[in-house]
Length: 475
Ligand code: SF4
Image (cartoon, rainbow, N blue to C red):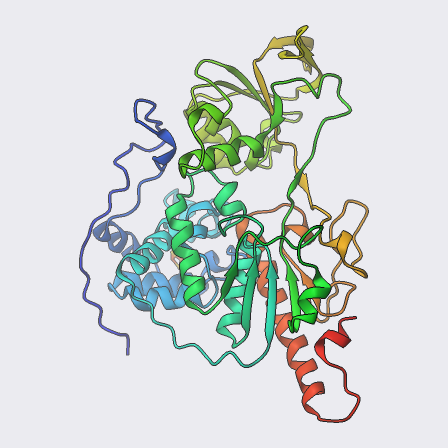
């Protein structure tokens, strides 16, 4: 029987910001989320529209196969705790997925009601349930004893948090090692506040911590810090690398790429993240009011950079080498960027960064469909992709990577690298992708880690003289 939950209605109307409008008059526009959240009444009303399809196409569109009709059904009856438990069966980060997943391509895009142009707003319902659960502290999970083994997770982005959450729930003792002073990786430092508020990320991380996961912040694994061998010597049975793609691609082969005023989009996003959390002042954040800003690229980082620069008061143009329909960015991100005033130059390639005698950028020389042209810009941000850092691979023997630095993994046990006991998942293996796809890959790796550690524990427990320990197996 479903638990009866009394709903204390504390309506949250977001920040009262109209959809797709930036309040530049506000003291700090970064705190204003773009989308309003559902009120309780709105969420229940929306949930009641669900047809509870026998063959729910929404589930086939969800990369982690969330049990969408079931959680929506529970929500429609006001059973928020049960709805949350259903979401938790597949996701450790529903409040985050509900906000940053490309729902239009996934669950919502596959909803049967999409044909009538009015799909169930599954992402907003997911957010509502997760936020309600956090605010009311509904979920009290019964956790197993942590007796199955000791796991080190390097990196606390979506992949690391997913592996840690799944393994902690399965009875493993998990420690996350994070180089930054705060956990969250790209969720905390890469995705802008207006799209994913830091307070939401912190609440989701607190839930992972409540599963018994330990966090060691400001702890580097790599040159000058801990090593994989040290972690094995300290008694970890398996190690997961979920460090993502931390090194942005440059355009150093293009003349003028080293001019002042040319920098990475991720640098701007990191600066603004530090500014919104109060760590640095506005003076240290690039882009001043009225500056002409170009963003080179067509993915989600390019959209985040452009929309952030416009919030800083810039006059922003995205320069993309292909057509609009070829952009890898989420469609809604593009549309919202247009609504906010971002301009676009299609099929245009930068062939030179033009500077003045003080080595300061003044313009971009471009190849466009109408021929070569020079456009004045004060700043250019690059958002043309990223690749993995090599700090762990370079300090660990036996981990093979491909020609671009992505870690090679095995199918059995799934996710294990060429070094025994060392696993990898998320963007560091599969190239940059969405948060939910990194989570999906990480869930499969968590299963591989559990199978591996169970197997080596069985070997150790056989009690036969000469059976190797986890650390010896991993050598
Ligand atoms: Fe509900 Fe749409 Fe899924 Fe059908 S496809 S169960 S209407 S969300």
